[in-house]
Length: 481
Ligand SMILES: C[S@@+](CC[C@H](N)C(=O)[O-])C[C@H]1O[C@@H](n2cnc3c(N)ncnc32)[C@H](O)[C@@H]1O
Image (cartoon, rainbow, N blue to C red; front, side, top):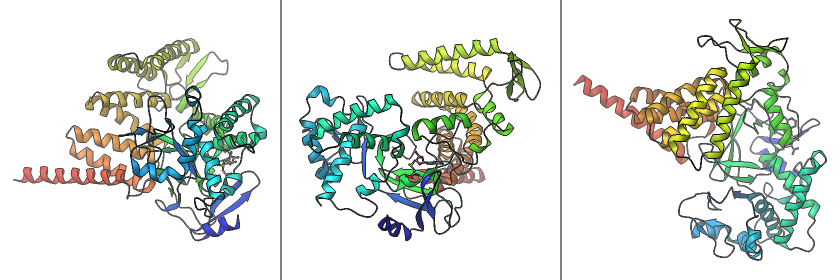
């Protein structure tokens, strides 16, 4: 702990303890929006490989990858990534190769993460790979596991997974209970590694970054440059303040967020948003985000349940919607959503598009214009429309999501920045230079804070904005001529 404290000291950070939260990462100086608070390589990480999607174990690319000829489980994009990983993979490869082919199918990313954790500990203890104050197994030991709060079903699952780890490693002295505990530690401490556009690529354990607690109104954001984790301030964090990131999707009512946090991280959040639970302001917010809209298309009121429980009344115009009407539309949406989930792989794109358009139409009828489910359907529509190169409809849909994003992701939130970026790209494709500049400028204003400016992704965004400015000047000079 002392070693860690002195390693953090120079970076203006310290670890403190709070009875209700456990360890906290706090600042010993001011941090300002966009400033890097802390960055780390993972102690261990794995790509989220599946039958349909495989990535290189080193850099997580899916381009030109080949399966390791030894274990036939792990993929690499070339000799550079393979060599960098070799000291550890040599042991993993040997262990995986002993498994029969049928069992190798059960080697999920979580199983590999635990196997790699033990192999890394072994290599560090044998001094085959170096150890530093911020990169040692002691930090993994210090992570919370919440074993006493886990339900029986989950414990059985962890026990089964531990048996498989045992079968892979075949270490006589291994402790099955400790493996199960490590699975539990992964569940509440590991981070999903995403690309710059926040698409999930893999999972990593970053024991120092895992000291950072959660808030639904965070002052910092965690992004990844490849597998390198970077935490940046998104608000001014004064000296002595606690660094807080969000563990979950913050779009959602307090009840939804609390449920997600309790389920995976086993705590009840008391952040400034969560303490409002049950207050009128919070009830209104949840009615808007997850409730119903007014029957009158021209009214943007939100609905609250009547005291006699027969229907819902618009709080703006007083119109009542019956429970039956709501139930009928909601079940139509559910039937269509189930169908779309079950059939995306066997239906053609046109059919899937029509299905999502129907869902969107019904949700417009049922939900508040700021509804999260309506926004999520529009997200799916944008993706399909972009795949079909229908830029006009994709842009129309994207513009409809912007006010919702602004509301649910206030301040410097990467998702709002990325949505402006999508809008800007579509406007550029449609030759609308003026709006491209407006959207890309908004994207840059947010993303330079959350992502910094040095990544390839940001360089490309800045270049696009420059290109749009050049195009606008050219157009202007042509008019002058
Ligand atoms: C990734 S760890 C964070 C570091 C942790 N406090 C520790 O002592 O190691 C996640 C765990 O921290 C605790 N935690 C995180 N944020 C919290 C919060 N806002 N309120 C209470 N507990 C929190 C919960 O026990 C959660 O499962």
